[in-house]
Length: 410
Ligand code: HEM
Image: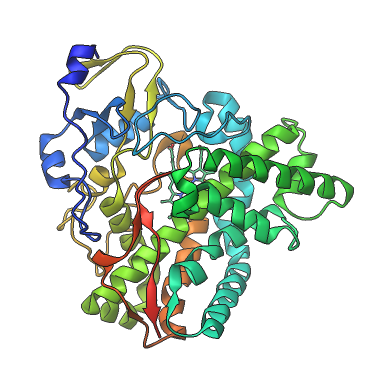
């Protein structure tokens, strides 16, 4: 794109009118325009946004577009976040090198491995339900329940000793978990990542001395390929960053929807035998609503002819979950509406991405959300929002758009 072309481009049309449960992007309009649309992203970087599910899959499945995330160079996104370069950080790796490192962790996130983890998930969820109950009503459910659960589950998979777990969770939180003051500091994520690396370094030494049945031990023992300590830091940091905030926010958002919409709550609670399908529809809806178009950056590594245009080497394309999840081919019946009765949802949305970087933790995320969402209504049958969803404080910096509080009574 030339400077002239960039200066004439539209900015990403992100709505900011406080309507939390409405899509942030004009999805139907973007879907109707179709193809790849050029935009200037909120941090001033130009890129092409995908509008259809087909384009989403095509770009993410095309090895000429590289994943290159959070590596300091300007890239399209809600804002630029400075995180240092990290070997082993698979969202920024490509080709065979990416696959080799991804495979080292993949076994711990397979359907079978996640099934084995179900008692652990139940135990962690019960712990935070108990703590919430002990705190008493009213409570910030996001802080006391949704926020700590995913990082504690990841800590257990990695083998973080319980002595280190609180600091590990704090580092996760400071990195992307959403404390407004820290996030004002553009270096806050980098500082928290540095502390996380120190912690993981200590844990690696502990595991070398006393091997256990956990992922960090397995990584220290890997031979094909051998993994350096720096790569273990990168991979563990990735797992924590990728799995913590996404699962915390989507669980809290889904609970907020059910609290705000009595008919959806009633349907959900009277159809608990359909929990997997309903959770799937909630995940589709949440990521369709919250997407600001900047979640999955890809960089063209050569000139690519696509859809009648040339995407030049060095230009960004942003596969957009919001538009893909609202594509009528993904959800033919009223795609922009929440429909908990939907039968055809399993495997029919693109929230977890597509192609070689498709979410490694998706089975874990589903397993957690299937417990996190219904259990809160089971434990606290009278749970109510204290503040309408549209008036809740929201964070719109750092790694994205997310809930800051969920005050409830029970
Ligand atoms: C609702 C929760 C989640 C959502 C919506 C989500 C979404 C995504 C998406 C869209 C990608 C692809 C990014 C890209 O192509 O650049 C991704 C990648 C990834 N996710 Fe998730 N994720 C969730 C939970 C988790 C959990 C619980 C974990 C594990 C602890 C996890 C680990 C990862 C990893 C390691 C990658 C990078 C894979 C790679 O680059 O090969 N995610 N996630």
